[in-house]
Amino acid sequence: MCGRYRLARNIYELMEFFGVEESDLNWEPHYNIAPTQDVVTVCQHSKEPRRALSLMRWGLIPYWARDISVGGKAINAVSETVAEKPTFREAIRRRRCLIPADGFYEWKKLSAKEKQPYNSGMQDNAIFAMAGVWERWKDPSGKHLESCSVLTTSANALLQDIHHRMPVILKPEDYDRWLDPGITDPNQMADLLQPLDARLMRTYPVSTRVNSVKNDDPSCAEPVIISHTASLFG
Image (cartoon, rainbow, N blue to C red):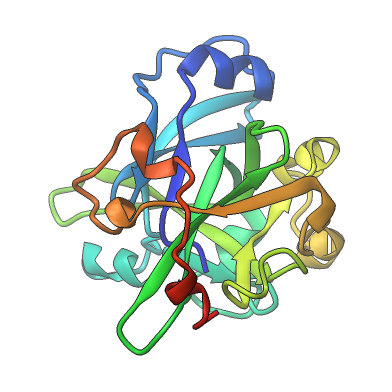
């Protein structure tokens, strides 16, 4: 799964990386992004073929939901079944997005009471895009809220010792196909929903400061040395 991640880049870096020509998005670097927070997404709407940056709530709320609490249970969508689940099946056909990141966190179980957080990302610490889907929900007052979910797949060889799932990380050459609003058959994108080549990635242990959503600073992603005693549980 993906329940916490990092996007420590400014808006201008994101615009350049994703080929967005203009944006008035207000975004500051974040090192510990958590569910229900607003996150950056990249979309391509049929009426505007150019890519656009948007802020969406993390935790997809389907249009038919009665209240916002549904989103807290839909931060991830299992790629193998996303086209079948009522929460996601319309979104995967018509509302796909990229969710930018430069690292994501996962916790490895060391013992019954202890878990060690790890940060994972690209070998060169580059920006990458997680495959996402999004929806537009109207609350009882008539206000619209856009929300999103990260697609997950089985862990690659690098990460499987930490957790059995990981985000679907798309290659830049596949962004156009994923965002194309003209593609509405999920089968035409099934080949994209695979674990990224482990050789392109790195992972390392980080401080347990990342356990608390109150901590959102560079130290959340800094490497730490695991004690020999703790490593015995691995």
